[in-house]
Length: 222
Image (cartoon, rainbow, N blue to C red):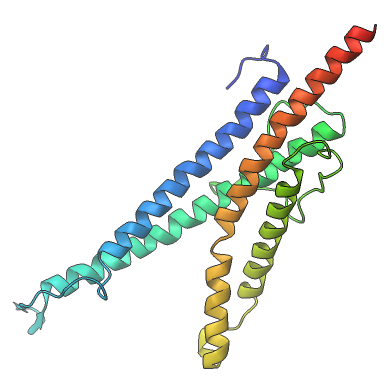
């Protein structure tokens, strides 16, 4: 933690950067889990012939197939768990950084990103991200930030739509196919949130430099 005497803008940039670093760690772990699952995919790995007799069960099993099944289940659980952590950290990065941008644009001097925390997960403020186009009107990246905000909002709507769907067993083949496409699109929420957070962090540096420049200009006029 930064010392109490640390200027607010330094502790703030450290706070935002740490959120981004956490999201990057989870993203790397998620990519690793995906790769691990791919390496044991039965549709890709050549089967190894050979069975063993299981005495107690009075049956036969294929050890290689059994190993792939067990690893696939384990990696599947890891994939889901790490993806949840990545998505949560990425959303905290996005909403947390957007929140301090808005605070600075309104004349505030926040020292840290403020986020809720429950059951090991961040609880960022819900709803739409703030409109920062006016505050960032002189920044060359404002248009790109707005595009990323729209993309993130579309992913969030897809997640909400997927959550509202009935179980796949009650869907027609066409509906199930569409639901699967929606699920794949919604799964990109973490990457979309991270991309927004990364761009918002750049916007933070711009606002801080702008505020510093304005302060120097005011001092020079006195």
